[in-house]
Every structure is written in structure tokens, then in C-alpha cells.
Length: 549
Image (tube, rainbow, N blue to C red; front, side, top):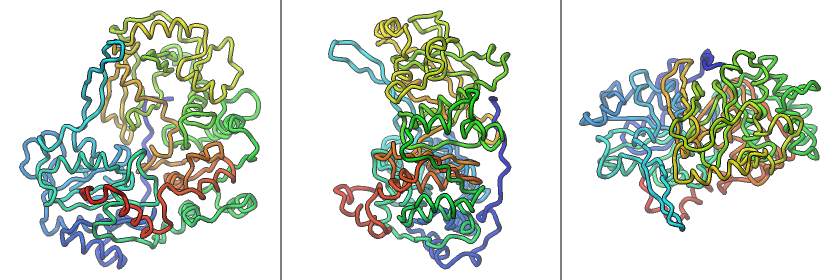
């Protein structure tokens, strides 16, 4: 493990070639023509259909004729600039990188998240409980609104618009000084995952604004076995065991189907795929780590649920254990595994861990005791493993889903009662037991730091080697390992499988069962087989007329 992130050599893609208007397809030209007229327009299409290529040409032509002048994307610019002209938004910071690579050089600095654009910041609240106790809470809210608007925008581009929920979109429209004068361009794919517990603004925009559908995949992408697999998923056609074991083996090393029997438990599958080396047969991921096929800082594991044996928490604990075993003794002595007390949460982190904080990738670069923490001190954290078990009692046991939640939530050791009592005394206090320094890297360079020490902040942090498919949208990794087991049947959807299997730039691994894959294909998150059918779904929603797009 290291605090540095390896720099990935960027591979050429079609949108980085010098394309002109004449090089585009008729559908792409139609989109560019609409953009140049100034109307609101949507551009949708599957992976590899050329959305970013068309956007780039349209922006270059607008720049050439002087439609807008790029302005620095900084808070100071927002406050002092009378006309920002244009900006580009994504749902996550992770998704800004591919968009920044796709837009003209003069506009790269204007790419940001919508949360950053509307200046989401923590706001403190006091909540009084039934017993009269007062608790301090914090939640993130936009600081840009109708009373504190953004400068006038001539152009607003939203990428991966299928994952932009109405709540976030409303914060953007409320912050625009004159929404009617802003040209809105949304790019996305309605066949990808919708936002969690919200409706995608893209669906409403498709029903109200001009839309161009790119239904032809570029030759470069069409030749990719990964795109072929994704197309097969979208078709709704189920796979057979024989098909996966014969035909799809010919697509290795780009697409790798690693099946287990449907009767094999999720717990056993977890050990086979992710378990640390116990002196017997190496797990799939352990072997991939040793061979260099898996790099925890360049690759990702995607799963459908947070808990259970194949949930992200369990898989993360396995991976962290595996990485811990490879650390030099002097590193482990200098940076021990630390048990962090934060309210009822008991977290186990080490310097060097890759973590997810508020949906963004960070690395823990420092852990120190918090002097403001008033509860139990002096607890020897070295006796725990990554599952929260004491090494003496539980070293060889694999927790079930229920035990896993207990280990992550409460810890199952003999100190439980002591800690629970201590935590009750600390209910009204906000300090966690330790301060964490989180560093965000971009192309191997540290570009941002977060310092967290509050219990509410620790609620938003978890190990980041494995994440859910919902958190992966708009992002890409070198190699992607997709966990698709029928134990997650209630969560698996066609959109989920399609989204997750289009995240890799090099190799895709499907880990699981044929039953799990087919259950995903059989269920749709948004009704309708075609774009037209899905648009009709949004037209029938009760809030259709009220949504501003």
C-alpha cells in the first residue's frame, strides 16, 4: 500500500482525434446544428456511440464564432464575474475527469461537479430529542439559491444526466439568475442506473426538449468485447451456462466470466473470490494481486449491496486484510490499524487505506488522536482485524451477513458493554476519537485534502476498494470486477449490470453465477424497452409539468 497513486497512461480514444464537422455522422451533425441554434437539446446514446465527440465539435464551433468567452472556474470568479458564460457539470468529482478530457482545451477548467457549482456546504442544526437532549447535526446544502444566484450563464452542460436527480437539479435551476436565457445541453443514457431514491432529470428533459439519439456504435467501440457484452445485456436475452463457458471464453482477456455454482453460498463465493491467502488455495483476487492483474489503486470491485457476504463492507474487509498482510512490519508498526470511535460506529483504518468519503475517492494520509474526544482512551487497537474481531478468538472464523453487520456496527468483542456505555455518555458530543487527513489525488498528484474529526463526518466514510454499482456511474477504471450473484436478486437490474460492465477501459471480470446475471437482465429499473416507451413513463408522472428543464 502506498499514499501515492500510480499515474495511468492515457489511451487514445476516438474523441481525442482531430474531428471536424464533416467527420461526424448525420445524427451527430443534427446535434451540432441544434446546439448552434441555441435551443435546449439532449444527446443520448450507449457507450461508444460518440456523444463526447459530437459535444466537442459543437463547442469548438461555438468558440470559433465567439458565442462565449471562457472564464476561470473559481469561487472568486463566480462572485466577481458579471458573466460566467458557460460551465460543465457532473454528478461526482470522479466523473469530471473523462468530461474534462472530452471538451476543448480552452474549456477544461470550467468542468466541475454540480455540488461545487452550487457551493454545497455543511450546515449545522440542533435537534432536540424526546427526552430533551440536544444533538448537533450537520448536512450539506447548496449556498447558491434564489437569494444568492450564480452569474448569468449562456450555456450549461450536464454530463451523465441519467444519474442527476431532481433534487440536485432543482438546486442548480434555483441558482441560475435567469434560467430562461441559459441553453441547457444534457448528455446521458437512460438505460444506465437512475439516481438512488430520486428521478433522473434526463427523463423529463427527453419528454420536453429536442433530443438526438445516437443509435450507432463507433467502429472502435463496436470491436470491443466489453461493448458487445453490454449490448447483449441491453438486448434482454438471457445467457446459458454453456454459452458463458464456451463462446464468451473466446473474448478473453477483455471479458472474463468467472462463474460459481448457483448452489454455492454467498459466503463461500466471498472466500473464493476475495478471501485472504490462508495457506491453501489463493482467492481469485489474491492471485490477481500477486500477478499484477489487480491493482487496488487502479481497479475496482463493483457489487450491488452494502452488506451481506458479498456486500461492499465484507469485500472491503477482505481486500484490506489481504493488503495488510503484504505490508512490511516496519510500516505496520509505524501506522498501526486504528480503531476509531465515532458515535455508535467503530471504524478500523490504517494510513494508506483507500476510502470513499461523500462519494469521492480519497486516501488516508494521517491518523491522530482527537484531543476533544472525551470518552474511553488507551484501548489497544492492535488486537483487532479488519472485520472488527479480536485476533485471539476469531482469527479463523468468517462472519455471516448478520455477524458482519455486527462487527462493522458494534464489534462483537468483550468490550461491547463498556463501549456502549461510553458512547451513551457521548451522545451529545460531536467529536470522534481520532482526526483523519484524507487526500484526493488526480493523476498521481495531491490536489485536495479533507480533515475530518466529527462523528457525523465519520458516518460518510468507508473503505473504497469495493463500491456499489450506483457509486460507479460516470467513472472509469482500468480493470473492473463485477459481483453478480443471485443473493442480491432484489437489487440487481438490467441497468445496474449494463452500467457496471461499461466502466472498464481494459478488462471486465464478471464474478458470480449465471442465475445472478440473468436475474439482473430480467429486471428493469425504469419501465419500457425503448427510449420512446421510457419517455412515456416520465410523461405520466404527477410532477411532470413542474420540472424545469
